[in-house]
Image 1 (cartoon, rainbow over the protein chains, first blue to last red):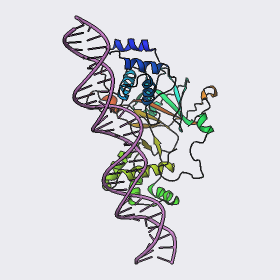
Image 2 (cartoon, helix red, strand yellow; image 1 turned 180 degrees about the vertical axis):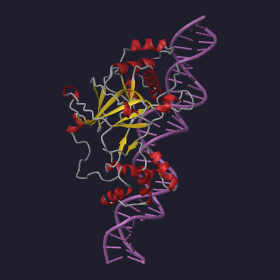
Image 3 (cartoon, chains in turn blue, brown, purple, yellow; image 1 turned 30 degrees about the vertical axis):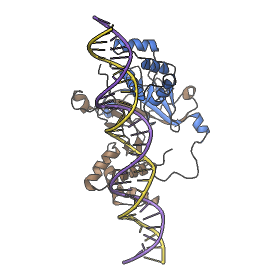
Image 4 (cartoon, chains in turn brown, orange, green, red; image 1 turned 135 degrees about the vertical axis):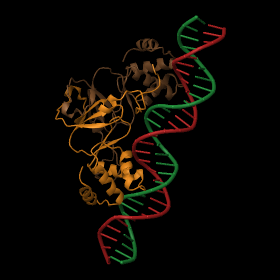
Length: 155
Length: 155
DNA sequence: CGCGTAAACAACAACGGTTGCGAACAAGCA
DNA sequence: TGCTTGTTCGCAACCGTTGTTGTTTACGCG
């Protein structure tokens, strides 16, 4: 993630205006190392600027995504995660709490032409699902003898 | 995907009852090779059985997923895809139309312990995003409706 | 073959995440 | 300072999915 100042310059270069709301969002993003949701960015920024609206946060995050400063990830955790790490990397996802951990691997996986079906694709995104240390330490759900055979059980 | 008869047996073996609605869903799934959404299964089944409710389709797809007969995929296309292919495989996803194509690859990607951060994970899921042949043929502007992705800020 | 009961059904409302809309507002520039 | 245009914000809408509820149905049993 670039610094708030660099992002300001980048925004201005696109003819976008700088506002206190955007500055606050830039700051929040710059000091986070994880993969916040719009909601959690909103929570961070609201601490300083209680009047900011969630709508503005979404808008700014989408702008940053469009500019390539953020990557929007859908990791199946129910909401979009915004990834401030620009480098090519992959993810570990905790299926219990939704935590996301970066993984820097130089893996080349080519799509065999025979199976490509005419698709033109880019880099593969690799995701591992599992349990983070804190969730595997503490069995979160009842964890009873029920094999969860009833319908629409999650967890 | 197992045959409707086999699925019927499997359902009964779990103490679940067999209904015309479920039979119709089994038939629809059995004759599809792609990765339908609940909505598209509903569309298929509605042709034969107009009275069926979308709720029932969701319920049955979830039951099948719980039983391991289907795999629920979140590929960032906006809705859950139900994958009738049980074998371990990966996916090509068209970012324009949401089409999904299977890819059978025997790739072993290990998570380096140094980066695992204590996660315990299973097999990697590999996704390539790109354009399917029909979407890359067609110029992007016209009536192609892009699911999510874009937003305001048109340059 | 008819019963009883638990399961499944359909219709509808609710829900969470996200976006469209429109009016009020403020950044940046002359 | 005044103007123009992008921005903000609250609200309602939207979409995919699930909860609720009252009714209907499957199916084992006598």
